[in-house]
Length: 85
Length: 133
Image 1 (cartoon, rainbow over the protein chains, first blue to last red):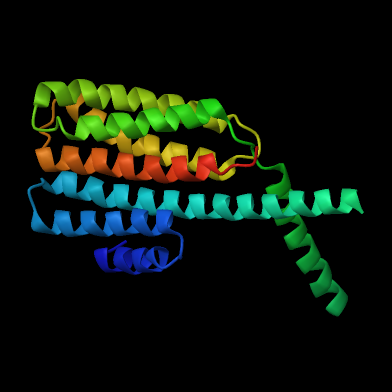
Image 2: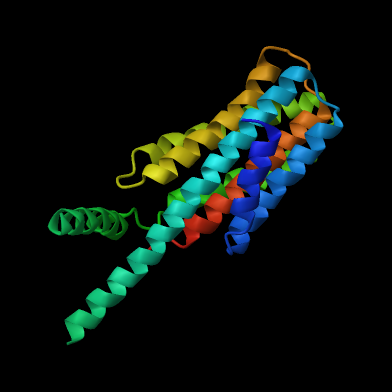
């Protein structure tokens, strides 16, 4: 994955509408800017890129989990309503 | 064909609904562990310019994330949580391995590692707090 591809993916995540996900994605974007400046060895740079991919994967997993949590709340609400009728 | 498409739609949405209904409930131990990781990463990042402290800190962080990953992986209906914990552990292990092999570690790299761990721990903590009770 190139830095441009990472930036594209981050832009999508940053526009998810949820502040927690936007903050996480914006932070990774800051890291990508930091590593462009230097101050790291080549192997550290490579590992940081791998870490960025891991972080994107975590954000995607957490988005999926947050979606399930919303569905869970909805289902439980419907069950409560159904039990009252 | 319509019946087939309808069946597939019902089946797929059914799986998601069942998955959501059965998802792992709020777990106080899991929440405590991820909070410990977040707070430790916040503190350790400030000590990155001291290599002797950072070696110990990297080891402590690798132990914490390993414990978190091992704890979450056995929780039922927690695929995303376990996957995230594993990825977080990989980020932390990378730093510890460098210190352990006595490879040179730059202050910038150490700071980016701990900042990344803190950032991801905060996100996981945010989502864990909203798990159904």
